[in-house]
Image (cartoon, rainbow, N blue to C red):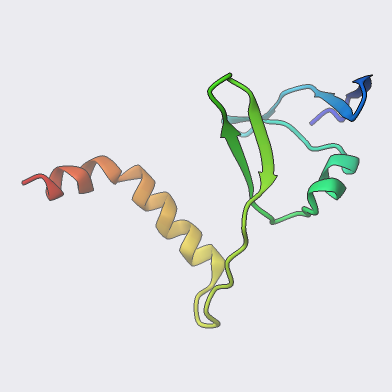
Amino acid sequence: MNGVIKVTNDKPNVTRYSRKVGRMGNSLGVSLPKGLATKLDISQGDEIEFIENDRGEVIVKKARQNKLPEHVRPEVLEAFFDVFEEDEGILEDLRNR
């Protein structure tokens, strides 16, 4: 992905970061500028949340990290949630019967 970035400080206490959207497999992705990643205290493997408010603005913040029990591997839990999301309609249909 291209690391093109434009940073502008057009208002006091406001920094705007501009990035190009790139292809990541079948999805689209945007890399985070190092300064923003530092401010958010995130690193590779962390989760971030995108929160859209009623004005259409999107807020990016670090997701709260929950500690998994020792016997649960993160990749197994992630696979479970992927399957659940894919089959959510089927599960909903079963619940409504």
